[in-house]
Amino acid sequence: MIHVPKQILTTEQAMRYNRQIVLPNFDLDKQEVLLNAKVLIVGVGGLGCAAAQYLVAAGVGEMTLIDDDHVEKTNLQRQVLHGEADVGVNKCVSAKASLAQLNSDINIHVIQNRLELSDYVELIQPLDMVLDCTDNLASRNTLNQACYQAGTPLVSGAAIRMEGQLMSIVPQQHSACYACISAYFGEQNLSCVESGVMSPVVGVIGAMQALEAIKVLCDYGQSHVNKLMLFDGMTSTWQTFKVPKKVNCTVCG
Image 1 (tube, one colour):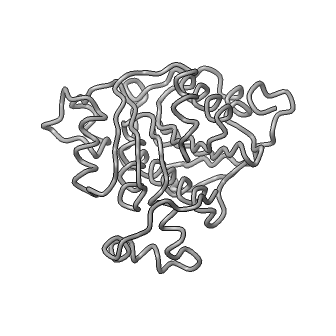
Image 2 (cartoon, rainbow, N blue to C red; image 1 turned 90 degrees about the vertical axis):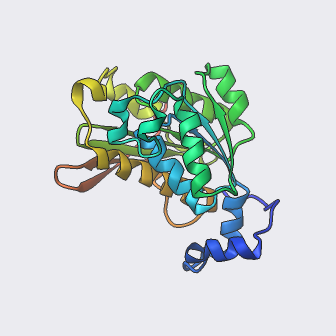
């Protein structure tokens, strides 16, 4: 999904992002798409930290972070934007400080409270991309519904134990949505507290969310729309399954 750029890359920015710009068929135009992109990341835990740092490093122009949680010592094992001195600090505030050190050109906004469906729809409508980095099925379904109502692409990720999953939803393409598959999962109240999670697994999924977001934003490469990707950290392998759009889906049907 390419938008008409409002900002033009400076010479300094072109030098900074040179390793992306020289990629085949990426060039300055797509880097300027990133420069003008407005991205929302919901959840600044393991997934959100990984996704945010790569999107900020890649040159996304504006980012909003949402999380009402505060940094705990047990988060430091995998939530790489937070340090020991950040324990007790809101995760958005901690992440913003780290991301500003990474790339001071990016405009970063924070929302330190949870939102309802109507709030999400209003917030998401003017944005270009949403990354769901939450840790529960109810939040994923809410974001899925909000993005479909707003017509905004969504990259949904999840990780637990040694496993992860990834799915891209693009309403403009009338794609299958998260609700088309969530019924098969049931309400799994699994958390890292009871089940554990391996640190690099959230990094793998979060980094893939960032990559998918860039591909959808820039119409670059092949994004995984209408597909569910499952990662097995025990064997370091991926499986990809086609996700047919449910005719009677309450969100996209």
